[in-house]
Length: 183
Ligand code: AR6
Image 1: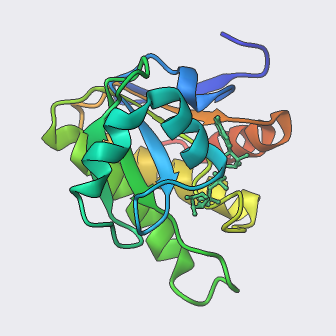
Image 2: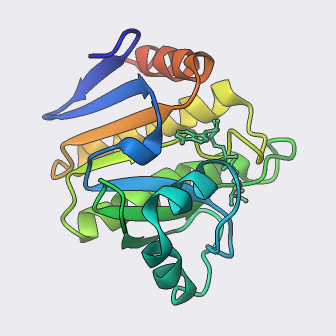
């Protein structure tokens, strides 16, 4: 395991927190922090489309966008990941505009789509934690607790990895994972 990485078992599945570049993940699917158009953007979205090539955007055009909190799947194109699951996180305002529910929904819907397609390994970025401005400790708590609850109920998924670009964000996610109550 990379330095500072941490993991936690949930039933027979594993949640892992690592620092790294999501576009290099060799997994069944990476999750894209997209926008409602699904037609590309900056941040991790831009990096995924650059690395994956035009096959991804070609499929995205046929999807006619995506609602906040929902998720849709495409090919991974030239990526090592077989698929990209595009989800749309909430733009953070003050936490009183349904942002926690929508962020939880992003994680749940992404994993539901993965299960529907028989996928077993899924890697997430820190959805909404960049230009969408979600306070990272709050987002981390919601992300890890939603994924944990999903894995308890859906044992077909084997591994969920959060791939965080910076050491700082990785440390916040690691603390959130550590703070989940034992069961
Ligand atoms: N690997 C892992 N994490 C990354 C990478 C990467 N290659 N690149 C950036 N991040 P953001 P959002 C981190 O802004 O807040 C786009 O324009 C980044 O450091 O990509 O959900 C979309 O089209 C941050 O911690 O997503 C939307 O319009 C995290 O990924 C909008 O941004 C998410 O930051 C979505 O905003």
